[in-house]
Image 1 (cartoon, rainbow, N blue to C red):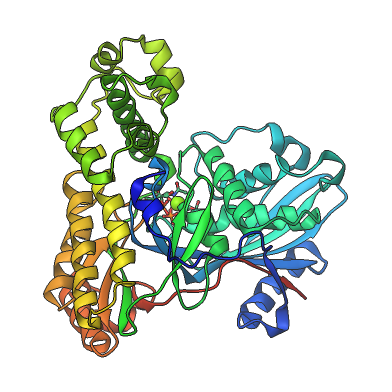
Image 2 (cartoon, helix red, strand yellow):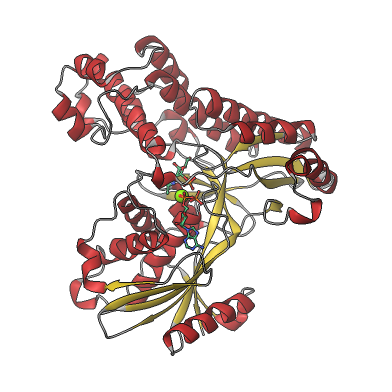
Length: 478
Ligand code: ADP
Ligand code: NG1
Ligand code: MG
């Protein structure tokens, strides 16, 4: 692993290997919502659910588009979640219903899920099916359910960078695993759910599913990958993170934007490996080439600037640089789905990744350093968030004009820092302010951003709200 990671001995790591907690539904603070989804389940399936699962969405404070390159990220679970009421059925079917009428009921043969392919269709039920399929990959054959009934209700705003998709996929994984009495550690559940969501077609890095299980009240987490581990990130006492919606939405599985970034990062890593005399086709992630070259993140940024062109690369140019064929490239570089005319921006993407990975380390360390006032820490955290946004907009090109406007407006309203959160191309910003300033800040942003777009101050609930670190997934027993 990188020198930066080895250098930090003082971190408090979560006790690994603990399973998802099982709680009595009536003792949960979600008791009223559990009862609503339970009633929907009973009305639709004429029986009571055996149990419920709750999986939260997340907000990523910093570390965007680097999880799939192997670098640590800093998310926290949010209050908004997906609830699923579950029971088994002996008729060999999977039957799904959703409390929201816009998501139509669905049913299919349970046994066929294992062999189905969901590529290219981001219909809501496919996220659930991905989760079931991912769980079936793990459950020994003799213990797999014959059939399953599930009623879903989520309130994570969809396609907005708060991970509604992963809350849904992870809830389906957890529901299926618990139905089979297959209990695994939270780390395993995060890894299984990340693998499951790739069935939808996006090559995600695993941040969302990891925090969905490892989230904890009271502290954000530093999530590391390979192996998956979570460490507490204690923030200044007066820090408040506000989530604000840009009103633009982007479904990740319906375009190739996200997978293109994953491929660009892989190819950048492979070209750096090749230029440095390494076996390029053994390299999958930027963190792999960093480890093989034994350089720090700053040195890696220098290597990118020296060794990758500013201009975009065509597939032909990539092949000639790697001295390989198009066919082999398709096999090892995630380029299968791209047309020959596709342009790949390697230098800009890799530079963002190394610099963003360094910002994550700094973000965490600011809070651990002695002799700094809260005010200084807050200013520094905010500055890193703003740098992150600029890099995502200009080098990673995954922002949106309305999201840039929102970030600018937030800063003009007195925020300490603001950035897009999640994959981008629309969705939400995460904004740093302080406890004492939050009421005024919300009022100013309502006026400056939302009012001008025809949204009255009374209508911003669900679009603009302060958030704090929440608990990860749980199982509730009626
Ligand atoms: P996000 O940034 O929220 O993860 P994605 O584009 O990855 O956005 O996934 C959004 C998709 O997830 C929606 O289009 C829908 O298919 C599915 N989804 C999210 N929330 C729900 C829900 N409550 N019920 C059914 N499907 C949902
Ligand atoms: P969202 O916006 O929640 O779909 C995606 C990826 C993450 C991560 C972020 C960018 C999935 C399921 N999620 O998040 O792994 O790469 O973008 O940091 O693919
Ligand atoms: Mg998603």
